[in-house]
Amino acid sequence: MNLLLSCLGLAVVSAVSLFVGASDIALASLVTGDGGGEALLVLLASRLPRTLALVLAGAGMAVAGLIMQMIARNRFVEPSTAGTAEAAAFGMLAVTLLAPEMPVFGRMLVAACFAMGGTLLFLAILRKVPLRSPLVVPLVGLMLGGVITAVTVFFAYRLDLMQSFYAWTNGDFSGVLRGRYELLWTSFALTVVAYLAADRFTVAGLGEDFSTSLGLGYRRVVAVGLTIVALVTAAVVVTCGMIPFLGLIVPNVVSLLMGDNVRRSLPFVALLGAALVVVCDIVGRIVVHPYEIPIGTIMGVVGSAVFLYLLLRRDGRAA
Amino acid sequence: MIDVKNVSKSYGPSVVVDDITLRLPAGGMISIVGANGAGKSTLLSMISRLLPMSAGTVTVHGLDVTKAPSDELARRLSILRQDNHVVSRLTVRDLVAFGRYPHSKGRLTEADRGHIDRVIGYFELEPFADRFLDELSGGQRQRAFIAMVLCQDTDYILLDEPLNNLDIKHAVAMMKLFRRTADTFGKTFVMVLHDINFASCYSDHTVAMRDGRVVHAGTPADVITPAAIRDVYGLDTTVQETPEGRRIVHYYV
Image 1 (cartoon, rainbow over the protein chains, first blue to last red):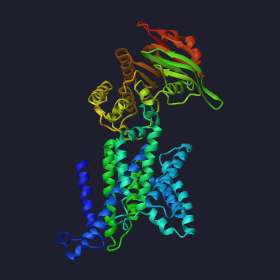
Image 2 (cartoon, chains in turn green, red):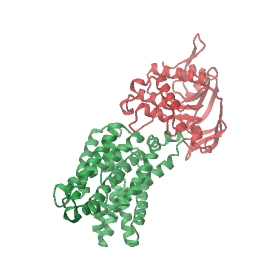
Image 3 (cartoon, one colour):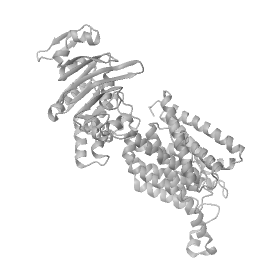
Image 4 (spheres, rainbow over the protein chains, first blue to last red):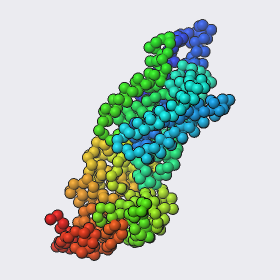
């Protein structure tokens, strides 16, 4: 794969994303200023933020999935199959109930702490459970996520917060406007951090023994990795809601094509993650135009199909 | 020199390594032999800081392995355990290159690259240098792992059953390569070996273990005797000396 071509591909789908939606933006009216600059307003206040949010969230979630797969040494782990995203949503519920006035950045940090807690719990369970098959790992994560979600829903239902619950758990970018997505730049910054530490994640992916033998502080790398994952997940849950499967299918596809040397694969994981999210969102905007289908739903359909393909393809091989 | 002092490892009431004190000289090849469950791998893991000790101390080249900074140790001592399950899809070249991690921290210099190419050449890995690990046979993979460990270029190289999965041709080639590396560069190999005849023919020093203790230690001439082998394995064998003065144990029939 070629990095330049991938960047170009992302640029093209992003450009398309700028011009698709309920309100028509004609390039001509932007240039001539027809319609009292309304087109420009839609572009700058809604479409551009939305597209940026898609790119940032997509890249962040895909990289978060890659890091988790390296740390858990399992191909089927990502924030939504490890209890991370569910714990983040639980954190959002807690902060909504206990500190409703908290600014959005604070909410994100609380959600990140919960996400971290959920992931650590997941890893602790993995250490106790005999892992006969690599598929047991995501099953454990899905069950843990189910338990956390059950608790969250119980309180959300009792306290009339089900609408917020859906907003956290089902990714939707239709509400993204200028001033309501900037938190996702945190996720971008963390992606850069992940790239700087790429070799460490590759070594950690070889396992604790290899890491120690190579003089790498394994626990510290795991801690850094999980912090990145928790913060990215929290930022996405807070601003647009969880995007399922993304962190799972993108790193797997890139791994099949070019292997797991994180230094080499991370840029592609980020670009492909971003492009996939943008495309899914465009599809969601087109199929029931002028209404929209949330990206979480589109991604759920696309993602589960690719996931099934990966499962069947890797059947029998140590994943 | 590796200095093992009163090292023990126990899991609850069961003692796996029982108060071992050993001095392993620097330079040359040291083999550890013994029956299954004698504690050989456990001892090797503790020497290489992969496993915490229940009691005792290990120093390598004067560095206490539990206290010295891990990255400093990684430039002095490398270890390959047996049964390495690597999930990552790395190419052989990538894997070997990560052997340079303690020196380069991921930023490979020209010298590192030279090293990597040389090691790949020694191990005859060029034909599949760009293949992924999951596309190799068990023996090829094992050679790639050992190449990675040798690429780490440490004074002490600890290997747990390095001949696992290797056919007789590659096993002999591997032992000869170790011998040459030890003699040319003054490296110290410490390895757990199952095949007592490889231990006999290639090591300078042999340690024989049973039930978590060292029962015999010395040159192969001291340790490879019918009496000592009976002590270690509880098996009657005959030992024959070849015209070159090497001892071969006959135990198949």
